[in-house]
Figure 1 (cartoon, rainbow, N blue to C red):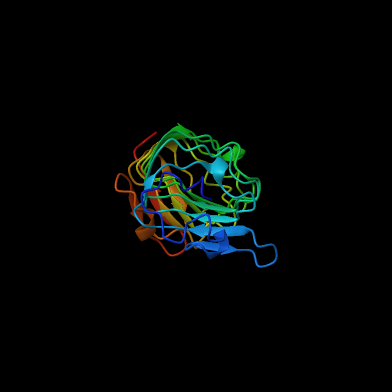
Figure 2 (figure 1 turned 90 degrees about the vertical axis):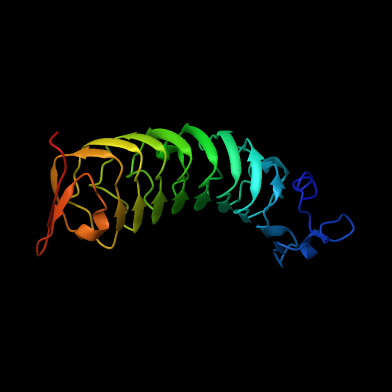
Length: 238
């Protein structure tokens, strides 16, 4: 851990070599083996992120709301890491998401300056929460590739193509795709409630039926007429 926080400008007084790491502020250790399991630090820190210096048995890492900058290598993370929260920092450059720990369930990279082509089919199959919003990511999105998804935030990026809304993960309750470059025929006939859905700021076309209420569609470039069982969404002609 000393290597991991070496260039941070906000070191806590407990972070010393003479103080056992399990006594560090922000650290929780596994009571059975005394190894670092969780590290949480949100203190407007400046510094870098080097995943290779993280403890090998770390399960959860929360570093959101800091000022970490520079590139981030997510291919060297501890193999057992399940939750990684790096949102609201200043991380930049192209990030490789194809070699994440296989049991990762939560990844939050929102509100950084990251780029790269994202292929959801290459992410861990157990991923349930994915926040990539407010970056410069691109690529086409396969919404069927992560069956455990409950929340997917891709808004304010450069994603393209026509997402398939007909086979969404059964547990998905929050899908935010606004302000990208999606286009094509919109098909919402199999959208199931409850689902918070935002598609504004894209270029969908055509007419589709949906059981999602009109007030959740948030499609200013389209119109929604509410009926008893299904609602009709009409966008520009294809």
